[in-house]
Length: 241
Image (cartoon, rainbow, N blue to C red):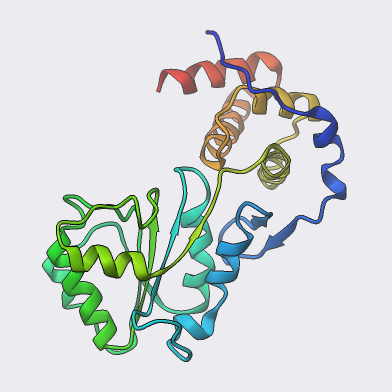
């Protein structure tokens, strides 16, 4: 199996411990690493006065966080879910309108125009949450201005929301994440092997989690330490999925 290797600056990686990376503790979840690629989104999530509708910034009590798959949007939303009671939805139906009550909060994941989020239903949902003084966090791989809804008024309302972009992690952040995630799993992997893995993965958290989880299971099943051979087996199978 051939790989398209990423060029990783090993000198930068070696200095990663000196960087001011911060961890945000999330109940029942892995800690969330904060860096320049997501700091503004973290600040938005932590503006609890806004989410609890104590200080309105605009007429719609909602915001959108957008970025590519694997950038950590859903994980980040757990911070909000931990602080205030939120209903998590990956699609809207007429039954969802019945869930909207006074000051109720919602997280809509994978929010893009289409079958899961019909334009008219989204419009009714936003209006109802606004009327009931609730709030909505939208998570999407598209920016508000990339979305094209069937209703001009809905396009306007979505684009008026506060928004924040999460970019894919840089190599230093990704390295810090793979070190912490493998340590949390009590999976002993040398620095050289970690860099070997990162060079062969797409630059996102999802890929790291998938590889480390599979390595953890594989090592347990064969009762051996992680080797280059076992890493290659996992990576080969990953590319075949």
